[in-house]
Image (cartoon, rainbow, N blue to C red; front, side, top):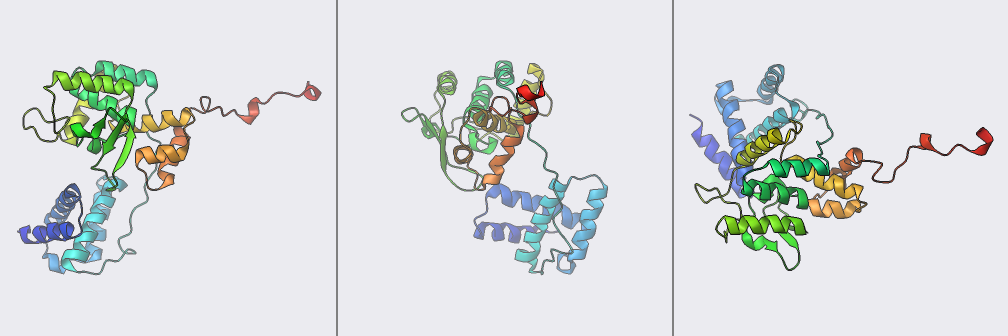
Length: 283
């Protein structure tokens, strides 16, 4: 019923060079919205969107999910229906900024030891030792690993900015073991064993859940917490924030500042003023 509109939405995304997963996400959210409203799309208004989002909020959807609906429907209104969007009628919702989950070095080791599948162990080790996102590690190719420079070339980034990150010696040993055991893959480094194509993010998340359970770690630990742990541990080692920002591929330094809040202040050499030496005059 709405296929023609969704095709126009895909075309609008492609002409703007949006990533395919962004386009697919927009199509999914807009398709649900259209079916839920059950109206001629040409008759939709921002007031309809407002009512929809409020109903979904009452049903328990989180602000982050509601803002994804907002972005998708806004794109659809502006670029397919050519309807003027009103940010006052349909504002973006305030997001609760919670501190990221960070594993200790000992917990990282427990996680890797509990990961029986060598492919996923190599992926987890790569994410922790280099600060890569899940979407980046699943798109790694053999040629992206530079043993000469001890660097990893990250090409398919979230913000479309190629970057280099560090390749640790310990991680290289795990990658080398994996590479020989899995038939020396020359193209996609971590291919799906059934299709030979890229793994899905969901497959990595499922492997992480199994490893977390086996290791007895907090249930909130996700693949992304390996990236958080990388950045936090570097900050605790005294690495400058701008260098961590470059390794993570953050455009905005504020994105990196969050790791100041979760760092172990003792390791960073920060001492509470309440623990100051008591002067002789107060004895």
